[in-house]
Length: 80
Figure 1 (cartoon, helix red, strand yellow):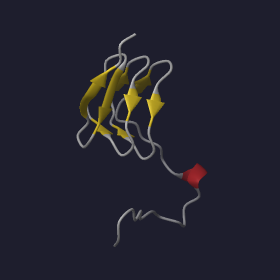
Figure 2: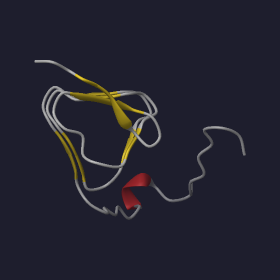
Figure 3: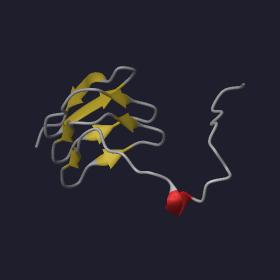
């Protein structure tokens, strides 16, 4: 398998698949989420936060914080 490969069962229609949830993801107002970012269950993203592309967010992100990396770390705090 190469990079970015996804394996899924193609014989089951999407609407018939069982959907499971391991916890909520709460996203505040005016949040920017970069492409391919992954936000894990039970995480809250505060208002005005920015999540960098490809970030893996494992913990809550306070309002107006910029995070990135794997796992995501604080890159900057936005002054209001």
